[in-house]
Length: 525
Ligand SMILES: *[C@@H]1O[C@H](CO)[C@@H](O)[C@H](O)[C@H]1NC(C)=O
Ligand SMILES: *[C@@H]1O[C@H](CO)[C@@H](O)[C@H](O)[C@H]1NC(C)=O
Ligand SMILES: *[C@@H]1O[C@H](CO)[C@@H](O)[C@H](O)[C@H]1NC(C)=O
Ligand SMILES: *[C@@H]1O[C@H](CO)[C@@H](O)[C@H](O)[C@H]1NC(C)=O
Figure (cartoon, rainbow, N blue to C red):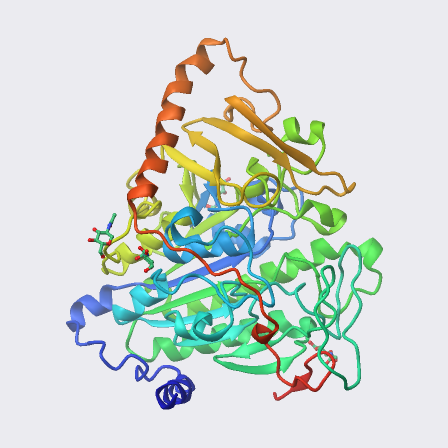
């Protein structure tokens, strides 16, 4: 207990290095100077088709489009899962949910999180001497040791899970709309299933709840300010840094500052997109002013748009998954259709990543872990296998070789969660199970098993509209290898050290500043 309190106390002294006093920072000055700072910005529920550079017919992403022209844009880049917690767990471990244990989302009442014997990217870089910070949505467990402050981050500022998992006084735009937090004193009630009205959304700085409910209207500005402060302080520490920024945008509820005078003509989604774009632009400007030549900035998304939110959801671009939408249900977030996991992705590193180039290499959020570990000159944690690859040769413009094979796990639309139900092999994609998430019209597409699988040729049919005829030469040519790569990875996973996440729920895990208040309300800032 005393040790824990000491640790909590030391966490306040963010960049002191006291938290892990056993780490040796005496790396030779020369190597240290060459190790890049790493900034990863992860958008939430953003559509591939929202990005101007990807062909959107709007000018809502001017900063991101500028970043694309100053760096590399990826057109075939995929989230590791199609929903929040599994996607983030894979980003931070380089492993699929079947290995790291995170196959579906954690709840407000979850007692567990990303298994503690999984090693996070922040832990690896911290051990290698980096200053590590995280700003934004965690969603990998908030109770006890699952909090980001115990998962390798020296500094944390953000919300523990999605911002629709708690009420606020500024409810923003949601579909259907959710009410503001209840007022007054009273006992803590149980959270409801839809619209978590009873527990106010907390904002953390390190281990402390600094505001509950958080004011969503000012959150983008505060994230920008905290990111700027972190970059400033970390840059002057003489050590390289890792900053992971997991934005609240474009997840619902959308909130825009100042509030829209006429939301129905001003389109909250587009206004939110502009606010997100400006936030990323501010972070990039800060990098350019502080550590331009030595900072690698990676922008991508956690999964596709949340179609059931109708006009408050983003655009999948050409990846409309029309085979599924014709059956009913959505083919975006929570599904293994392209709209669920193909995400915008940009890399920026002046002088290192070539400018104004587009890469069609097949890459994944899974690759962030091995790539960043390689750029930092660190080593992969031993005793486990990884699903990502080191993409640094692609980023530096020396190769076009991405994955030949990628697996897309079930992310809740239909079927068993975490199961590898879709296989990408080159330009082909095979579905062993299809299913549609809840669409704007309320319909879902039930799970359908396909043996042999449906196979689409994505080069000729980006919309995944018409599967190849089973008797065609093309289908017959790819089927055996698809079956083999799937059997191989399942065999590999049985031989790996895998973890199991604790998905148990208990009211004691609710993050609560003042339990005497009906919504756990408090303000300390
Ligand atoms: C929320 O923050 C905005 C500024 O970002 C401010 O105008 C508004 O008054 C705040 N609302 C509450 C309830 O504090
Ligand atoms: C980027 O490349 C495109 C063509 O590929 C060109 O039209 C555009 O002017 C270039 N932008 C910059 C900033 O170099
Ligand atoms: C699993 O862990 C054990 C003990 O830590 C180790 O000997 C073994 O090589 C690991 N397996 C894999 C696949 O890395
Ligand atoms: C995590 O711990 C469990 C239980 O001790 C073990 O079976 C598993 O192999 C560990 N996973 C890793 C990645 O070491």
